[in-house]
Length: 100
Image: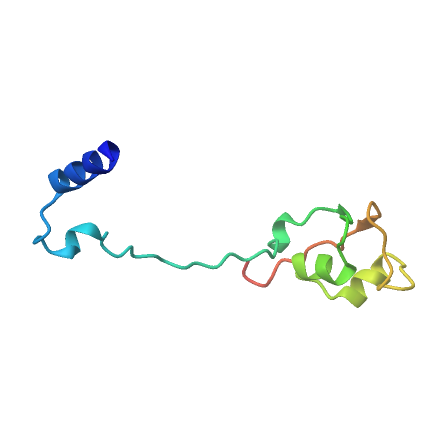
């Protein structure tokens, strides 16, 4: 019982019951949402890439802004839907856009 009285006294010392409830809440937090592109710019494209576990050829092609069928052809991959983790593939050379 002594602990309950101590808490009540402490709570009363922190603020009067007739004070506005707004003092007990924090102001709203302003947030900003941004997006990040995972496409590698053509000028920084590596020459080779190692397929990671769970990764598909189409995901790799998208990451490097390539067509997955062209990427399969470039690497002489007969079935682009069947590629193993650890496989090293070649990436075609980047083309610099006109004026770039």
